[in-house]
Image (tube, rainbow over all chains, first blue to last red; front, side, top):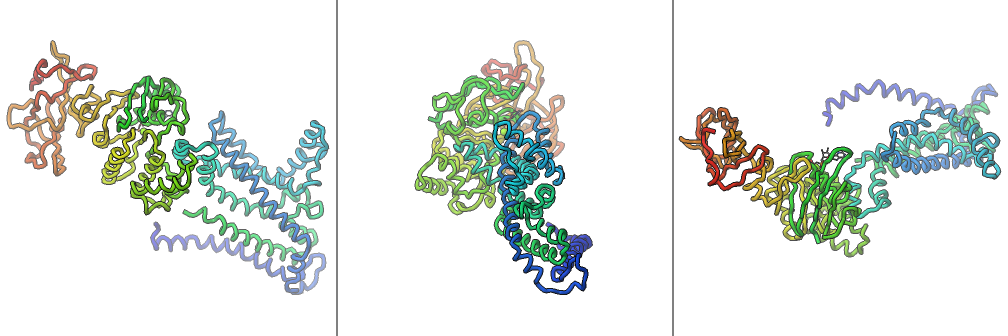
Length: 290
Length: 346
Ligand SMILES: Nc1ncnc2c1ncn2[C@@H]1O[C@H](COP(=O)(O)OP(=O)(O)OP(=O)(O)O)[C@@H](O)[C@H]1O
Ligand SMILES: [Mg+2]
């Protein structure tokens, strides 16, 4: 649509903000890259000697790395699975003509506005606490031993908390997608003899594929860097059972004052994030086209 | 098989009665067209027959069987929507196969039916495309293909051609008529376009505000409209209506003359007027003639018309082509001989 002329102008106009963003991004990245090759520990001030790939070797061969790598994957996949499954269900429910549905929609969206630290604290103290939590009370009420969530299933607990935060987002995006579905298509399917299940599988799900793709891409970006929920609830433990890459870098660099090691971890995290991004775009990005 | 009978059918949305009690008999194999102004309930009635809208009261019988509360899929009808309602993520082949797959038809039979339908509708080259890669006319044909493979007992069309351009519309109109002749299945066709209605229909039902004003063959409606509404709705350009003073022994409140029945004469016309806008269509010419105390009359004459803007002309019409309406707008149907002749004095 745009003419060559207006496109050139548009590029020119975008230049300042794009370059600012680029500098904003490139400078810390280069500094991190630089630090990752140094023996740089705040507890041992010295000449910060260049040590090549030592920091990387340290980070990658640490048994905690493998564990936290899989924890990261589990966390992302688990939350995606729950939020998309639950989101589709919730979206279908919210699409029904129920009384006061506008208010219900706003209420459903509420968890998304709660800060991660706050929601993690609420879950930790009010729901999952083995003594005072609602779940513990409920367990006692039906006569079973309360579960100590963060000790027995730390990663699952965090997945549940994070899912609770992201479910509204997924549900809202999917709801708008469902609402954009042409009613006549559903009616045509009904005349064609499709029952509720067939209609869902053959009409609704394909229609949602694009929205689901968008949800997966957006959520993945944020879920790779989950941090606050872990810090507030389990601090990565017990052991490394609920440590993800982001949290591992934090323990490496800040708790051990190892700037070099932390920087190497950061670079590894950047690489992992890019691999995931390329992988995702290859796999499902084509859904967004056309 | 494909006869449809509506008995005292009504439909209300809340307090609004969209369909007033309505009776209609549609014979097996008939091509019936629903016409009427926008919002008069044509689509609603069609959707009620299809089962997409429930019936407030009355009964709908399909093939002699009460279908009032049957789910849509059980009624054995196929509907073609104005928006085509194709499944956008499926290929043309899968779109057409969809109803057959739902009915658990054997794959070989499905393949065979698709091939036949595609050949009939000129879709063979497009079977593997998505609906988004087709033109409007092709999409419409896919929608029809999806309908015919099910071999329904009746087809329902809701303004299927209104998204197409004029020339394509003429083609599709012929194709649908052709299809009706070859399949011999009942078809109910909703349209705004009275040319479609006149050319395609075996019978036309004229709707107005939730009631059927008249049902009849196209010529019946054209020649013997039961009231002023039908007279004005059927025929293009519209019939001219002229209010007259009712006299003793004559209840005529209004007379109607079709533009094609008005003749330009040199002298002794019923009306005298001044020629306004002239529309040349090539094969015919429409004159808009301003007649004092009467209003503007539309006249249809030959393609070659020597008149100019501002000319004063006389108009006349054969007495037997003049329709008379009473106060309520109903046609007065006594023999022409009994009626006092319309004169210029009126
Ligand atoms: N779901 C609904 N709820 C309330 N009123 C409705 C509903 N659907 C249709 N109506 C009303 O019913 C009337 C008839 O609608 P319908 O769609 O049958 O008209 P139509 O004859 O098909 O008009 P058109 O030629 O413009 O398609 C309209 O006045 C419309 O406002
Ligand atoms: Mg309509």
